[in-house]
Every structure is written in structure tokens, then in C-alpha cells.
Length: 241
Image 1 (tube, rainbow, N blue to C red):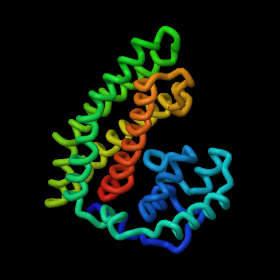
Image 2 (cartoon, rainbow, N blue to C red; image 1 turned 90 degrees about the vertical axis):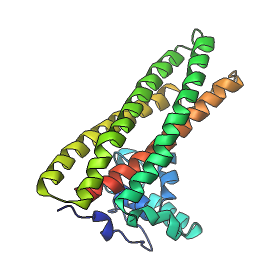
Image 3 (cartoon, one colour; image 1 turned 90 degrees about the horizontal axis):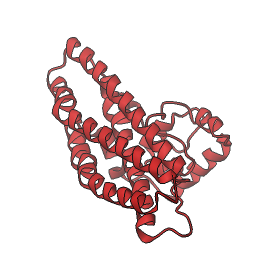
Image 4 (cartoon, helix red, strand yellow; image 1 turned 135 degrees about the vertical axis):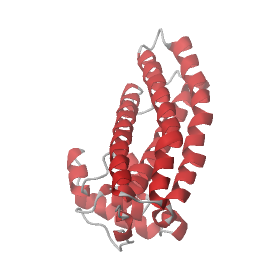
């Protein structure tokens, strides 16, 4: 039978260097903004101790713990901030579909228009925009295929298993989840490349309004995708480990 590993997660008065990055974000969602600023992956790469994640970025883990504890003091965790940790799988799936999948269906076509326009107008003088255009279109197709598969197949199988758990069903689910996590890793790699080629989404001084808007929307897409993947990898999927 699958066990909900989230039951062991409780709000703590302070964080330690041994705490998993993903667990810190589950306990204290505001920390996601802190980790983003430090370029620490809390979704696909969140299953590692804070000390290890800090070392990979050349950061001082003790300073990070002080920052996180101070941030927690300044921004107390509200019950609704961690509500998804205790929500049913059906409630969490509905939230993911209605917020994150809907966001992608609505926003990706609009971002695509901006990316294409900027590439066509400025691509000759700024070759990196060609790579931005290529990476975005690859990401767009991957995300749309991924979310469609989840809604049509994987999510229904998860909820069916929840209602009628069997060893055979759990074995199948674990194989499906392994593939979904690999797809998340692929999307994360594309996002890292997008950030690199856009110089951390920093538009050049001569950039027009559309140019600047394109970078801003791509950065928002990155943030929404991190939140999306975190909810799946570190919350929903853990229920079937």
C-alpha cells in the first residue's frame, strides 16, 4: 500500500542543514521565493539536504539557515499556506488542473506570440533570441503534451488507485510517476537554458516594451512551472511512493 509521507512533515521552529529542501518549502512555502533567488532547485532537485544544495551553489548553509529562520519569523505560516499537504489527492489534482494546467493553456499561446515577435524583429541583431525561440517552442510542446497526458491518463489512474488500492495498481503507478518525473526534469533543464541565454531574463538597455514584456512573461512561466512541479513531485507523487 502507498503511504502518505507528508504526514511526517510538521511546522518547525527552526530549520537545519540536514532538512530536505523540498520539506522546507512544504513546511514554509514562502521559502520558495528565497530558493528561487538563490537559484536552488526546490522541485525536481529538492530531494537533498540544504547543506548539499548550498554547497553545489557555493553558498554558506549556516547563513541560509539564519535567513530562512528570520524569514519565517517575519512571515508566519498560515494554515492555508500548507493546506495542500493535508488535502485529499482528488482536491490536489483538481487544484493543479484548474490553476496550473489552465495557466499553461491560456498563457503559452500569448507568450508564444511575444517570443516570435521579438525574434523576428530583433533576432538579426541578437542571435541569442533564435535560441530563446527554439527553447521556448520545445518547452511549450513538452508542457502541453505532458499536462494532456496527466489529465487523460495518469491523474485518473492515481485517483482510481486511491479508491481501490492494489499492489498491481501501485506498481503501475510508480512506473508512470517515474516517467512523469523524468519529463519534469526535462522541462527544468530547458528552463535553465532559457535563463542562461537570456542572461537571467535581463533585457538589454535598448529593449522595447515587447522585448521586456517577453522576458517578464518567460520568468513568470518559470516560477509557475517550479510551483507546479513542486506540488506534483514533492506532494502528490510522494503519496504513491
